[in-house]
Each structure stands twice: as C-alpha cells, then as structure tokens.
Image 1 (cartoon, each protein chain N blue to C red):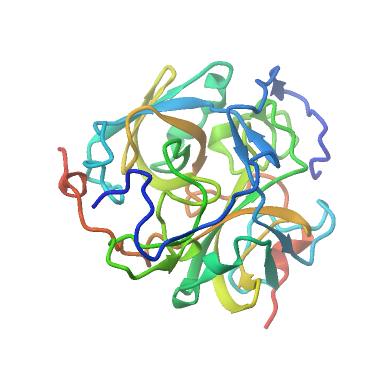
Image 2 (image 1 turned 135 degrees about the vertical axis):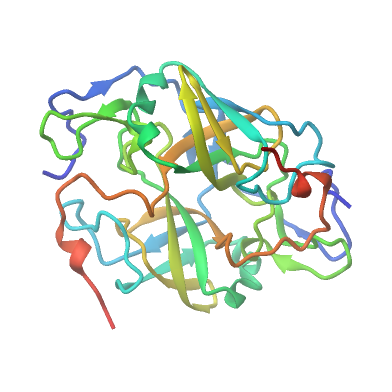
Length: 164
Length: 164
C-alpha cells in the first residue's frame, strides 16, 4: 500500500510550477536504518533507533551551542517524493484528502519536519532519535525546539502585540 | 539592534555554496501587520494578530480537510535573510552562537517554521494567529500539527521499531 510514485483512484495531479522561486543548499545527509519506503515509519518515535546527521563543511562550526538542547527540530528534503498531487488517498481506498491536510511526503515542496531527541554530538555527526526518513535523505536545517528556545536578541514591539 | 544584513563583532561568515541542490515553489504569500524588521515579533504568539495566508493556484484545492485541525504548521521563506553566517551574535554583544543553536532567520536555508492556530478558511485565504514574519513573506507549506494528526495510511514495520 506504500506509495511508489503511483497515482491512486480519486487522486488529482496538477501540472506543477517549476521549482525555481528559491534554491536550497543541502547542509548534510541523514543516516537511518530504513532503506525502503516499504519499511520506514509513518512518523518518528522518540524511543526509536538512533539516526545520525552528517554535517557537511562549511557548516560544522554552526553546531556550537546545539548541545544545550534536548529537543531539536530537523528539516529534510524528501527527495523521492512527487510534488504534483493536490488531492491524495493515503489509504488507497478512493477517499481523498487535500495535500495540506496531510503530513504526507508528497507535497509541492517536499520538506519533512520532525522534533527529535538530541542524543549527542561528535565532530560533524549529530545523533538523534525520532526521525522517520530514508537512509541518505538530504538535510536542510537544524534548530532548537521552539519550546526550549528563548530569543537572545532584544525584544521588539511585535513581541507584545495581541489582538482579541 | 535588529539585524539589517550587517555582520556584527565576532560573527563568522563563510563563502556559501550555491543554493542549487533543490528548488522551491512558492505556494502563496503571507499577509501580516509587520512591514519592518524593526517591529516584527521575535516569535509568534497564539493570542497575536490574525495573519492571512493567500494560496496561489493551482494549490487551492489542496486545502480540503485542513479545516478539521485547530493547530497547523506553517513553513515560509525568509526572503530577506543572509545565508552565510555560521556564528552569530543575536544580542550584538560580542558573544557568538552557532547558527544551528539559534532560531534566527539567518541560516543556510532560511526557512521559518511556526505552529499557528487556525482561525478560518475562506476560498484561497487561510487565517491564522501565531506568526512572526514580515508582510509579503513567501509561503512554502501548510501541514497539520503532528500532535493532531494520525497517519491515514496503513502502518509499516518502522512504526513499531524501538531501540534501547
């Protein structure tokens, strides 16, 4: 039942715009136990296997200070995903759902986000638990979990702006 | 003290790789009350002003089903940010931090992520609270909050894989 780039009954594909509005730089590569889309988890779990983020130069010094956090947000590029479906049938049963109402890897910009548990950092390798992606997935970004991070820059007017 | 693309004492810039590893399609535009980097909030708040996500064709039908969720993850492109700093000084006080230990907009792939509260959907406009970005920011993706979403596809072996 796993998607291997097929179109299923009821699904709707569009002719997608070229992906040229902005360009990404892969900052590393993710090593996981999963080499097949038939086996990878649907969603990561914090008691799952350790996965390793290999950081490419020149970005390794940008890891400084990450070790203070226990929970980190990981962004990665789902390089095998098609990008042209607007309605999808995850269960392949004829019922379709809008792409933006799903966390499917199939989306106009196939970026996966996970909140992972930081296990350790050694040199250019960051070890985490909680990922769900295939071995070899390109890494886009690492950030502290927003709930653990307090901005270090001085506050600005917008920080205090509320509205009924 | 806000960053206007300057380099501050202690900060380190590298010669960044070309952003050509993958390409993004802007799926819409975000309308917010903030037109200056001097005023935008450092982080969004769920009792903040309503912001509107304008969805471009051909992606509007992909919103179907999003209305079932109260909390949505928004990805956007921080189009004014420089991408070449590996060490940053958010407080501009000489103390520097690795880029990946910050939620600064300045990063190799300047993608902002927010968990926002869904207020409503009308046609191609999605109204939310909780954003922090400038008016006119390009929209990359909308997903249900992972805590509210249960995969609709059948489980796979990886879903049950744990490790001590």
